[in-house]
Amino acid sequence: MDDLQALVDGLDAMTCVVSVATLEDGSCGEIRIVTGNKPYIMSIEQPAGGYHMLTDKFVPNSIYTKYFTRDLNFEDFCYRSAVQKKCLHSYVKPDRIPAWFNMTFMPVARVDGNIHYCTYTMEMNFEASSERMSNVSGELASAVLETCIKLRGANDFQATMDDIIKDLRVLCKADHCCIFLVDTLERKCSVLCEAFGENSKLLPMETYVDENFYNIAESWEGTISGSNCLIVKNEHDMEVVKERNPVWYDSLTNAGVYNIVLFPLKNHDQLLGYIWAINYDPEVALKIKEMFELTTFILGSEIGNHLLLERLQILSSKDMLTGVNNRNEMNNLVDKMAHGQNDKKGVGVIFADLNGLKTINDELGHAAGDRLLKDAARALNEVFDQDCIYRAGGDEFTVILRGISMEELDAKVAKLRAYSAKYPNLSFAIGRHMEEDEKDIRTALRLADQNMYADKRKFYEEHPERTRRLQ
Image 1 (cartoon, rainbow, N blue to C red):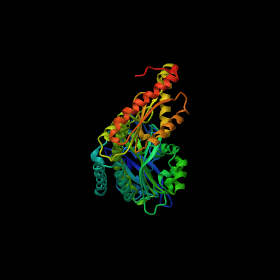
Image 2 (cartoon, helix red, strand yellow; image 1 turned 30 degrees about the vertical axis):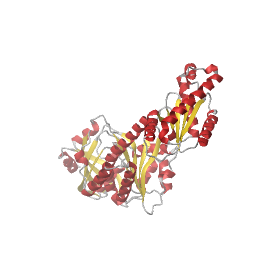
Image 3 (cartoon, rainbow, N blue to C red; image 1 turned 90 degrees about the horizontal axis):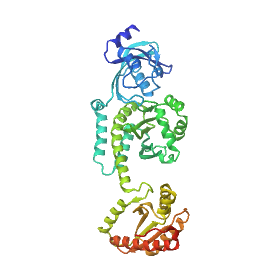
Image 4 (cartoon, rainbow, N blue to C red; image 1 turned 135 degrees about the horizontal axis):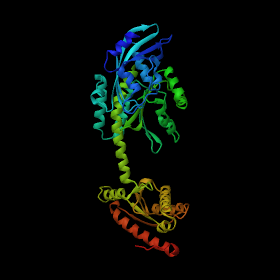
């Protein structure tokens, strides 16, 4: 013990000695923190940066899980260094601590029976270092650079992501790779892209994703358990998954999964989703870890930007209350049609204005008025494709139908009147018009609007109790 203490005391950086016991079959047994130098012990007993270990008291030769939750990545590095005598380095940000760790594992030339040793040296930084992140092998740097170039030159984001996931699957020697998005606000999840090996028997993720799958995706954070990723190489590691997440374990094994690498995808600490490799070659597990650590940093930023642009597009084109297109989106379409070079084809316009919305707002409150607007949108969606429907004003909806005949237009109007009767207090004043050339869209809009006002006058003549001033 004295020689090990002298070893770490001769180092300025936070350093401890780790012991790894091997079992009869040579696999990894207990891992203990044997001793540490003063900076390392201070990191446990007087930690900086607001993080805390599971205990604030260092006790020599304690099992490492006394200080932090079980981490398969830490175990793997300790085993490779102490038993297989490898010098290892990693630069990661574990979720359990708000800091980046520059870690080095060095084998110690000492074996006590089945007990092997290595040193674990770490440096903490509360900001990421691009220099340390880029300190990777030439092969890995080339692969990551290729990913960056594809993303920077992308005109079709989806096609580019499809290419990237295919490349990653090949590098991982995996049956399946996937980027899976989660929306923590809406509690929804979706597949962004995935790739399969030629002889893979795994099914597409869409086979499993339903309205309840978010509950499984939500459980992955706990399964990773404060580390930066989950690397499951064999049956021994799968037992850890079974212990932490039995529902997901059953799902994996039933699907034919026997190993997996799972990495969170984040942008500014916001979880966007996960990337994984399934049924990969465990001999390249360390290479996959290094590649994903750097690739996810880049992909998280690009996917975050893409989702932000999508969100901005939605905000600029959708009515947030009803979910249909807004007036801005309608104006863009009208301009495009009016100045288009398309062949002549008919365009039908329907104006559907709510009768009595002001009365509802005045007598029952704006919440009731909002419900009526949502019901109006539901009725319209039952008759028309959503991309044809626009909320043109406060109580006014417009439907623009391209390539439609007058007979079809009248049938749609009749159907809308019938469907609107299913909702309480929902009544539309409807005007419709058709032009043979869609370049005359503005004429169709003007005449449909005039016809709508004629229908509205008729409604208020028949229902004087709901009279409102007509403009």
